[in-house]
Image 1 (cartoon, helix red, strand yellow):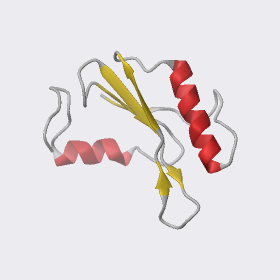
Image 2 (cartoon, helix red, strand yellow):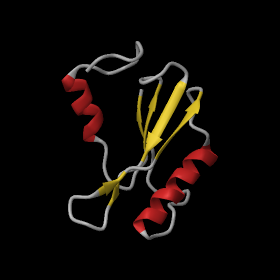
Image 3 (cartoon, helix red, strand yellow):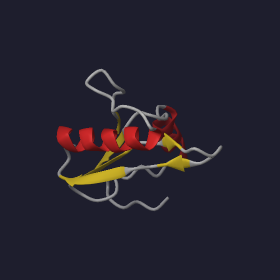
Length: 97
């Protein structure tokens, strides 16, 4: 994989380690790996058809994901899943730094 920034993970073993903690319903975020001083987050949501997935995502300037933005992302994922958004006790963010 080509590095986009000095923080981009490019080694297959390191990528596999990061992906090992990722699962459906929980947000995944990266900080400065795609663009300097930009963070991104997404949530995998199973689709209605077998094998289909939705992946709403967002990005923000800086290396801190604003809580209101994360909340809106979780609402969008819950809406796609047909359920209620995860509240404070919902899935934690899996961070990749």
